[in-house]
Each structure stands twice: as C-alpha cells, then as structure tokens.
Amino acid sequence: MKYRTLGRTGLSVSEIGFGAWAIGGTSYGPTRDEDSLDALEAAWEHGVNFFDTADTYGHGHSEELIGRFLKGKRDQAVIATKAGWDFYHGGSRQNFDPDYIRFACGESLRRLATDRIDLYQLHNPRLEILEQGGLFQVLEELKREGKVRYYGVSVHTPAEALAVIRSGKADTLQLIFNLIDQRPVLEVFPEAVEKNIGIIAREPLACGFLTGKYSGVSAFPKTDHRNGWSREKKELDLQKLSRLRASLKTERVSPVEEALEFVLSFEAVSAAIPGAKTRLQVLQNLKASEDPKLRIEEISVLRRVYESDEIFKTGFYRN
Ligand SMILES: NC(=O)c1ccc[n+]([C@@H]2O[C@H](COP(=O)([O-])OP(=O)(O)OC[C@H]3O[C@@H](n4cnc5c(N)ncnc54)[C@H](OP(=O)(O)O)[C@@H]3O)[C@@H](O)[C@H]2O)c1
Image (cartoon, rainbow, N blue to C red; front, side, top):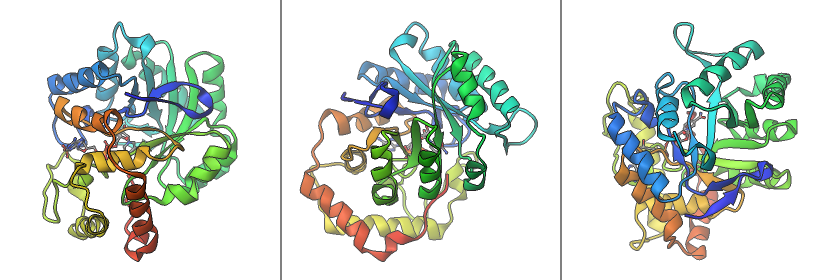
C-alpha cells in the first residue's frame, strides 16, 4: 500500500481507503456483519488506514462496525465521518444547524468508540447553503474542543467544490471522481492543489458500475439505492463506458483496476475510497495501489476520449 498526504491536514492516508457506505447494510442491499468485518480486516492487513463513513450509513451501523473493528488499533487509523443528514427525528432531512451538528458529533464519537474524529465532513450541503456562510463556526468550536481534528465537506458538483475551496475554511473535499465523471480534473483540481486541499475521490467505481458486472437491465434489491437508477441512466453509462473501452483495449488490467488506477493517477487525489462489502472486493481493489499497470499513454487516452466526446457532458449522477 502506498500512502499520500491528505492536503494541508498533513495526515498520511492509504491511497486506497475503505468506503463504508455499503457496510451500513441499508443502501447497497443487505450485508452480513461478518462479511463486513472480514472486509475491514482484509483492508487493514494490507495497510489501509483510512476509513470513510457517515452517521447516516445504516443509521449509525457503519460507524458502529468501524468503532468495533478499530478497537485496539485506533491510533493507527484515520477516521473520516460525516454529518448533516438528520435521521434521529423521524425520516431523514438535511440539517446543518450548529446545535444539531454538535449533537450529531457526540453521537458519532460514541458509536465510533473514540474521543476524537480525525476528519469531520459536512454531508452534501447544497450550493445555496455553502454560499450563506456560517457553516464552519461550529466545526471550528468542535476542533478547539478536541472532538474533531480537521474538517472538510463532501459535495456533489464542481460548483459546490469551488465554493468550499474558496471559503478558505475546509481542509478537505470529498467529491465524485471516476472514469465517466472526470469533471473535477479541469474544474476543481487546479484550485484545490493551489490551496493544498486534500481530495478524497468517492464512487471511484461509479457505485459498482465500472466493474463491468452490470448492464442496462440489471435489477437491484429495494434496499439498494441503485434500485432508483432508470434504464436510461444505466444505458447511458454503458454507452459512456463502451466509448472509453473502444479507444483503449487493456486486457492486462481488469475493469476494477483500470477504474481505480485512473483515479489514483492524479496527484491532486489524496485517496480513492472504493466501497467494499467483502474481503474479495477489497483484495481486488487494493491491486490498483499494490501493482499498478496502466501506462501514462493509456491514461491520456482515457482523458482525451472523455474531453472530446459530447456523451460525457450529460447524465451526471448526484449521490
Ligand atoms: N455524498 C457522500 O458523501 C457520499 C456518497 C457516496 C459515497 N460516499 C463515500 O464514498 C465511498 C465509495 O462510494 P460508493 O461505495 O458509493 O461507490 P463505489 O466505491 O464506486 O462502488 C462501491 C460498490 O461497488 C461494488 N464493488 C466494490 N468493489 C468491487 C469489486 N472489486 N468487484 C465488483 N464489485 C465491487 C460493491 O457493490 P456491489 O457488489 O453490490 O455491486 C460496492 O458496494 C462510500 O462507501 C462512501 O464512503 C460518500
């Protein structure tokens, strides 16, 4: 495993982190805790020290599993979690009120069985909310109190990413970055690098789609957020993928490795955080760091096709 510095936090994180949305058990179909703990163990054995979760994943279950897993290992791990989706008061709604964030932080600390969160991220505040300002004051207070070491924001769009960078406050940005959504390369990375903001690339496998195992007619369980994908969306993504594959035949590299190596080929990225439900998925994902095979010319082709083909200008996913 190779490690990178998470922007101006100075934290050293494994370039492949552990995305812990799926192990919450309620958004990527049902999961078994023994599989999830085994996946975490596999990641740890191979040097993964960076764990990204959120309070809302499985309504606390993902955080609880990570807290349980990291018992006795806490000091060697970097835990990132998120707040802003209030699921405590019936339903689920966005809430960035300072009192709520303070309450949510306490709940996350308890579930993670720790006295400090290494990276506390606001979970998808929309552009209007980011532009109102004032969001970060409570995070500054939590930092002063030692409950949070650093804070960042997870966003959907390049415009939101730029608003975060220009706030001058957040140390990190979590954003969607993968083969079929390369917008950050030109729209976000230059400014993020200039300000030394740590970039965490989420959905690097486009929620599993880039593994090549899904098609336009794939069906997902009711408890899987992909159940909401329309047939048009799946077919458009397939077309995008086939345009990339038509230009680049990389038999030496599996689709999973190609997707993750592409993301890691950008120095602006501190870590890619593929989600994994099993040991096998973790081991496949780690190869992108342990034994990278994509050549610079191949990465250039993937960039050129993306920038030159109009199909990549539409159908972005907000998750
Ligand atoms: N708004 C936000 O802040 C936000 C939103 C999304 C994600 N995130 C974070 O980013 C992380 C990564 O995103 P993600 O988990 O949504 O998407 P992802 O990493 O693109 O895809 C993860 C899914 O792909 C499948 N998969 C993973 N490795 C595989 C392998 N080697 N072979 C075949 N299938 C594989 C698994 O689902 P199946 O096996 O069921 O296909 C897994 O749940 C999340 O876990 C979370 O920590 C944050």
